[in-house]
Image 1 (cartoon, rainbow, N blue to C red):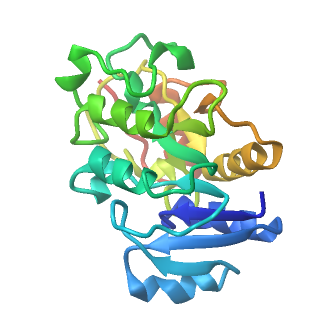
Image 2 (cartoon, rainbow, N blue to C red):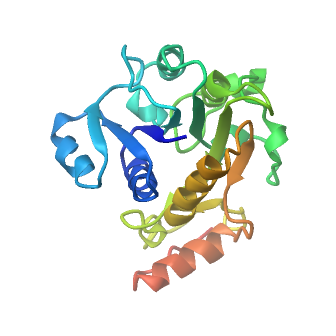
Image 3 (cartoon, rainbow, N blue to C red):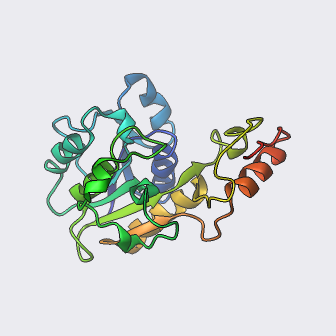
Length: 238
C-alpha cells in the first residue's frame, strides 16, 4: 500500500497523516475548511477540502476515517455515502470510540459489541461525550466492518489526551465530581498515532481493537495526579 487518505485532519487526524507521510506514504489529508490547507500541506501532505458524505472522496489504496459524530448532521448516512464511493479493494481504518460500551460492564472485550448490531437499549442511551444515540456509534462502525477477514479495522479510542488536551485541565478545581472509583479508559495521542501506522504497515485488517491503556486508574487517582502535574488545584470528588 503506497497511498493513504486521512479523512478528517483535526487534532488526531493531522498527527496521523503527518506520521504516515514521514514513513514514506503518499498521503491526502482532508479538512472542511479551505484556510487549513496550508497548515496541512506544511506537513508533507496533499490537502483537500472534503466533507464526509459529499461526492468524489479522495481516491487512495487505504483510508483512515477520523470524523467525530459532532461534525456531521446525519452521521451514519454520511459515512455510508462516502463508503459507497471508495475503491472496492481499498482498506479502511475507522476511528471509533469506547463509548459503544456505554451501559455494558466496566471490563469490556471487543467482542462485547459487534459493529452494525445495536440492541434496543443502545437506541435509548447516549454517551456523556456525545449527544447522538449509542446505536448510531455502533451502526457507524458497521459501515466499514465486514468481519475478521474483511478490509476494515475498527479502532475504538477512549479519552484522547496529549498536547492541547491535557487531562489535568478537564476537572481542575471542580467540586462534587461524581464516580471517583470508576475506571477511566485513556488513549494517549502518540500511542494512537503509532498504532495506526503499525496496523497499516502490517496489514492488520479485519480487527476490532480497543486502543486504550491496559492499566486503567480510577477517576480520582487519574485526574488528581493529572491536575497536580500541571500545578493546578485537583478536583474534589463526591
